[in-house]
Length: 288
Length: 334
Image 1: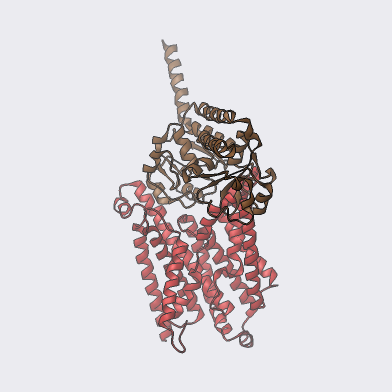
Image 2: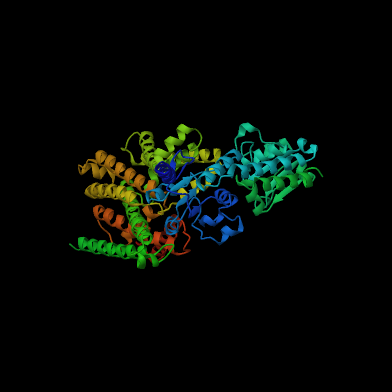
């Protein structure tokens, strides 16, 4: 009996120690954030991080978001605490968060930390980043099947890619991210998606993730299909020399709404939806 | 001596107004006066009041003071009413520093570690000082006012172009860069306040004690030299004051437009006085201007915030325009 008691005590001790150790997560800055227990009140200041928290089924732990977080619908009911770049420090502190999730490039990181707020700074830019972030957030929120959720998303993307007709492989695509000629390069999240779906990106890999390409470059590359957000489509056909581009001549142009653009440009858990959007564009416009 | 009395009056009025705005500033923010009322028994409300609102309001006052002081020194030093604190390349240097830090972040582990350690504040301050040093090197010292001015403009343009190059190479930093260019007092804590206050006090003492030389300089360089004033040494010291004061303010708050240019003009529109007093009064005026803008920035679209730099330009600019119109008569003007 006494042996059993001491064994029980030992178990409790170990269990207690394990519990006291809490959660430990290293963020993109290389800073290890330690919390006594998994956070219950979370402020997220980056849309892709907000979406990841919700995808992990922990949406109700969010108590505040930035003004650009708009998905899922639930987060629109939450208090907004400024933007990721200009966070409203006192509004964040007033929400008494256990942890704040934000981009590494935000100036608010240091300020919040000096006020004793725990900050996890992460800025996913590629699908590998998005997977890593989901793993880290799964660790933080103690959601054991984070990797399984990611594999399901990844499998849907593969399924969408396989369902595309073989003709898609020959398509040469130009994706303009923002007006002023910023293209989605092969290193960007969008570029990766194009590669997964098997279409060709007219932007050379050496140009980096979001190169500002010369309009001439696009004319010379003569893409079969152009993808662009509705905000930037104004005046596309009146750009000098662009009328001759095959995609515009044959009206193979996909204009994504603002909501669709959000899905496509955010490296987060809506990757499968992004794949479906892009695949729909490819089959409806690219292969017509 | 009535000039001294007038200055004293204006100085006290500016201080009292600043104290009033400071009190107002404690009550304005995302949660309004609730935080003040509950500060006694709610630790979070207390933290908001004591660790966020007070330091940022005071920080705005000190940063505005630094810019006002730097503006008065710059206008005296260059004998040019259009001179502002950003003239010697400090602003473009600071912006380039921030752009580089943002772009380097996340490229390699070494660069990330370095960027984290220096922080955006450190990068901005280093950039500002490098900008001024570059200007001095280009102008071959401080002997020639015109050469110094020209070198400052050139360094400003070249470093600005370099900043644009860096941002275009990594367009995902565009937004963060814009945040810095618009300026914000939202990230100022007690530590930043302390750093700026120490810098401000030192700069104020040095600049005010050298005001006599600026008075002499106002009569022309030849006259100043013939009066036996140690022009070169004083100029070097004042350029250092200008660079450090501007650098300290810009590093903590980003680029805030117009405070440095407008403050000395606003003081001069109220009274004519010596440079020593002008420098002190201009610092007080700049502080009041930025602090008022900061409180307004928090209040206008609360719980969201406006960029404070936009407000300083609107506030200071419209007041200055009004003054110019009112005083448009022979021999008048600013």
